[in-house]
Length: 536
Image (cartoon, rainbow, N blue to C red):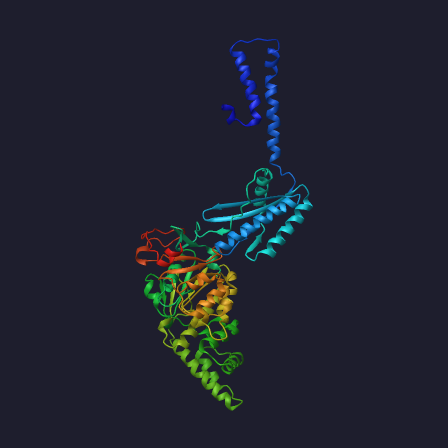
């Protein structure tokens, strides 16, 4: 019974040693006794050396191998069905060819990765079979992505598979890809529910740098989510909130408030605008809602007359020659709109240079009554931030509340440009709106992280359905979320999940603003809505 626990290749040696011990103990003597005792060490050493060499050689891969990773997406049912079919393909291919297949699925912390290795004594056979297998998978499944893997990962997989002989009758199992919903580090955002358990959800730095869109009808928790994100991200980023309605100024007492009437944003007195007249003209045209003739006249005056201030621009427009009667109407319309902006920058004893504080800064735009002037000021402010950025500046997170007000029928070229060149200048954009259907499609596609609170409008739901590639079941539930509940999708969480945002309470959290990993949990219980309970 004791020998059963000993590896088979050591059992004869142990048996021989046991016999000799018995002979020694009972003084049993025979003719060859001395010879046996003399050669015993040699008899034991030779099998041990042979076995050691075998173990050493096992570590070397016998033949040629290659490996790939399979990422299986879609609903739970689609993943399971796809995994079964891929298993069948692997089994059929291994039967009909002189190749060896191996599949390994590794799970940890809510993540699952699945690898397939292909091996043979002939390197050419491996290369051919690899391409055949990849072609079969890519042409048979739209929800499977084939990924190359790192050499160090590939080496470990190949050694593991090479040293195992498939002598059993087990079935091949392909575990569906699961990228997890609980990151070990990042910005804590809230909780999601996995069966009966709630899991913490985080956005990593790449999720934020890839731009964020927060959507939700009035009263669904959209602004609270934006404020929570700003507060918790402020340890990594400087934060600027474009506060259209004044809501954030009331919500975040410790933030640095910027009042438009105390900051001179006359673009003609800022060097960067003189170097980029195209951005200046686009910002004024979009903000003031200029017609094409008015925009053309503005461009001509700026290029030909080189005004030194908003007031100087108005004077030069008034003096600009009229070539036809319609020019007079265009000029008058343009002057009326620019006069509105002049009232915002009319003071002379105001700040000329912008210096954002560390942490959270809020531009209190509701101080400007005229919506056109508010939009113009906001766009000029954003343009100034964009033009003044340097490559080595600290990362800046800009939250644009009520973002639909920044775009017109022709789109939002400034914000689109900022999002497109964000990596270069360390800019990350968060757009927050109750009407995703009013946001240009290019902006929606550039926001790789989406947080969707309840939406009532069928048109808005259709936009989300298309941009996030939702299944019909999730799309039908978008108007059923309770306050604070949302659908989350990001680069690190490609399959949408339902979360409950854990909002900040600034008064209780003043001591701990870091929120890297999980914050101190003062309210351990978060009530689950009926919708989440039913779908857990």
